[in-house]
Each structure stands twice: as structure tokens, then as C-alpha cells.
Image (cartoon, rainbow, N blue to C red):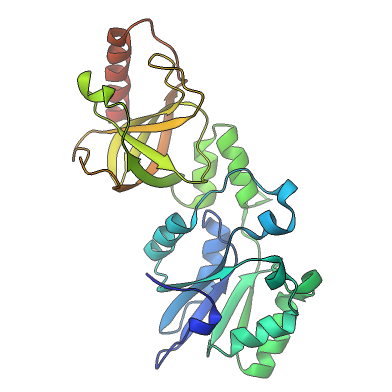
Length: 296
């Protein structure tokens, strides 16, 4: 996917393009409706912000963890047919610029179609909104689509609600709102390599900023390969103070070269994490977990 660091670098060339606007944390079904509203031109782009605006404007209200970091977001958006990404460095100076100035910068890119959620605001004091953007777009000859919130069972789909589902171990609820199983994305790093000695080699996946489900053992897919994973502090081995994600895949093996990137999708929770009296007991339980995961 092509990435532009700001609007000044963006140029459609001879191709027309639509641009979807928003943070897109998790790229849930509501975000996907915004993407769909910007389709119809030669290319589809997304304009997003890094870091999350709430971390800059109201850090005390910012979520401790996000649903998708920038690298993961690019991966998801690419799978949905997005051709390029525009990343705006979100600072207080950027937030304090006049809304009309930002709108004019958008129109100057040559964009044909813009889309955003019905609650989207921008500019100093949130003076800009989708209605004003549509008004200014009409003057500039740019179509602006206002996208209503997508609901599930009468409730607005939001990143906040998905985080709540994860905290409540409601993986199905999260998947229903995302349109896919919840996943995290990280780099395979070197661990203690104990899993190899008991017949279950694992990849230790270091997740940057993304929310992990509660501690426990899960049926997962790692880059599309079925497996089983443990989230927790490894109480049988070391009872670490830090949570880790360890993934055992049933086929394809674990690459020996660390630095491999893995997207881990959580399909079902098997059990809570627990401490065993010996490695033999742990090995037996992992075997049972693996068998259950294969049948799930």
C-alpha cells in the first residue's frame, strides 16, 4: 500500500480518487461503511491520524490500548481494497488550525469524493463538521458523503464498544461489530524456547499498543494458519509480571528468523490461564488444548 505523510505529498496524477476520513481504529463495520461511501473513482484512499487524536486532546480519557496500530491498520485496509493511506501527524497545532483551511487543503489534492461519519468534526474548537464540509465541497466541485452510524441490535457500533466486548470475553460480539474475528498484529521475538523442548514450539508475538483479550488459552489463526495461543504471565514457568502472547501453529512451522510479522486472530477461548505443578502436567494440558482447538 502506498503511504503519504500528509496532504502535500498526495497527488492523484491522471487517476481520480475518493478519500475516506477518520481514525479507523479497528476498521469496524461502521468504518467500512465510510470506506464504501468513498468508492467509485479510479482509486480509493484513507486519511487517518497518528497518534489517536484523543491522546493529544484529552490524554486522561484516551484508551490505554487501541484496536489496531498503524501497521495493522494498513494491513486491514489493504484487504478491503484501499489503494493508499494518508497519515496526518496529529498535534495540538494541527488541531488548532481553522476548519476551512484544512478543507481547502483537502480540495486542493484533486479529490473527487470525500466521506466521513455523521459525527466527524475537525478544526479549531471542532468548528468543522460533515455538513460544513459538504457545503464547502459543493463550492469546490467535490462530492461529500455523510455516513450514518452503523448499528447492531439498536446500538451504535464503535471502537469503545468493541473494547468492552474484549474485556467481557465476548469474542463473538467483537467479531459481529468488526465483520471478522478480532486480531492483533506484532513481531515474532525471541523467547525462552521452552515450548520446543516439550513438543509445542511457540512464536512469542510482541504486540505494540494493541489490546489483548483477557488472559487465557485461545483457538487462533496466525497469518491464516490454525493454532492455539496463550495470553498471560506463564505462571508454571516464571510467573512474569508482564503479559505475553505465545502462539503454536498446527502447520507451516514457526520461522527461525525473528522479526517475522504475524496477525493473530482470536476465534474462541478454551480456558483461563492456570499454574501447573510440573512441566509434564503443562505438556498434557497443552495437548488437550491443541486437540480442542483443532476440532473447534
